[in-house]
Image: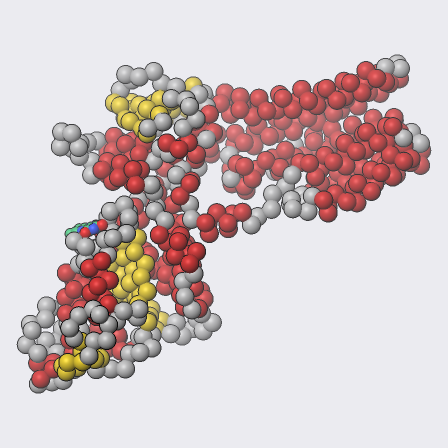
Length: 542
Ligand SMILES: Cc1cc2nc3c(=O)[nH]c(=O)nc-3n(C[C@H](O)[C@H](O)[C@H](O)COP(=O)(O)O)c2cc1C
């Protein structure tokens, strides 16, 4: 299969539209069987020698099908005639194609016959039949434009291509906010869009782009107000005074523009950015109506970030993760830490993600701590009441856990717990020593927690990592330290539980033991909930 990619952007290789076109072609390539015969010919009009049409009609009269001008247009026509698919990649310029591309379209004259033909559509008064049989040739138009949406901006383009290629003879992908494709800091969002374009390529070559993909392609990269604020800030010129603005102010304004006011939780916040290497401070007021940037320290800050400018730039470009940098003490945070914990909610514009990319993440099963706890809880309750019947009930529950918790991922700690609880239940049934075996159970449970601290993944981290970015949570020193501390604390608690249960039951305080053994995990649970917020915030202060 031969694809001819016509890049009509004067920016050449750095074109935004070309990024989309390349993703589309990648999608096509992925979907076809015969990859060896897949060839892409890229014509970069900005570096080619294509003169404007002279209007002499020599290609119709004197040398039918051959232009009198000898320039790169001959190559274009040859490649068009050989191609199976032409991808027209171009920016929108004044609601039409840029001059470079219009020039190339004018020079298509040798491709059609001079004779008037009937135009069956209601588009205009006439037409010209093609000199060549190009019925099998596919055409795809891919373009970005600068306004927030492509909607309504491409009327002239589609009208022209309707005449040129014929109505319904080409597919289109038009995307607004095109300049965002070159902004590294936004590559996560633009990357999601490029994934959808790639999917469109795969679907197109197999038949047609599905309605759901078309819907995703129509989704705005960012909401109108967020985009327009970012776009206005990007010029680095003050809207009010017309004066040039410092790069760090432009950057801070663009960061502020990303604030998602839908995430407002009734609390007005002031985020203070102290760029320690530049000695400059900006404050971003975050309220229900949006964000506003102030220079200096005129407001009372609720969250203060002390960071070298370069570090914050690297974080926003995705060169280093924010949590990893915080764990490595590359920056400090003081004040209200909830803003940091919910950073993606406030600044991630997560509500505009296309369906496909979220469903890709969703496929992955996550582990649930309940899978591990159910066997233990049934063991402690049932076996301490009656070692024989309790053991039987516990073993049945252990056997059913994989089925009832099937929608969750089954991790090593789940398997280990089921195995240990089954063995302990068996021992309790044989020895009839329900009290002693459940007490030993507390000690074993504590040892499991403590042993997990010797591994890359402390027990609790296995169950909560999905809420902290999955596997990447392991690169987050704050996450890891918090989980090691908690796993150790739970381990020690259950070793102590075993000790006091043994002593108190020996002293005949059976009821008190039951109350304590139920109360302590509740209190420890409350401590855990507090600690996961307190500890990272405490460490973030540096
Ligand atoms: C001369 C000129 C005219 C433009 N006209 C429009 C326009 O009419 N509508 C629009 O939404 N964007 C317009 N833009 C913005 C471009 O379409 C936008 O920046 C696009 O993403 C550039 O794509 P490229 O990098 O592939 O060249 C114009 C840009 C320039 C330089």
